[in-house]
Length: 66
Image (cartoon, rainbow, N blue to C red; front, side, top):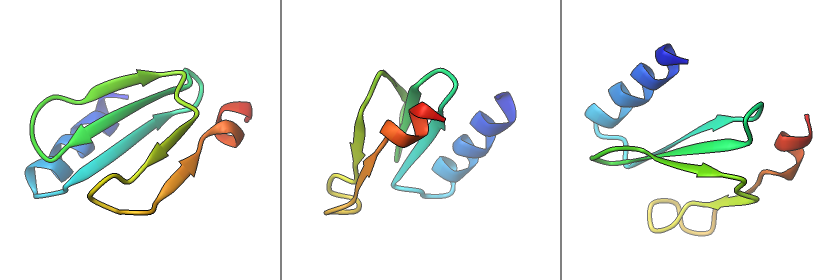
């Protein structure tokens, strides 16, 4: 897991505007903003791209069932 978080930190440091780290076994999403600390969302049912990717909506139900 720490390797994935290091990658997310590298993406963030290189200018990524947003990142989602999906953890299906825990049904958790880590939201990585352009700067600052990631937020942990437990039990989220969907994600949206907000201002970064307007109109993007990801339904998490199938991922959580796997």
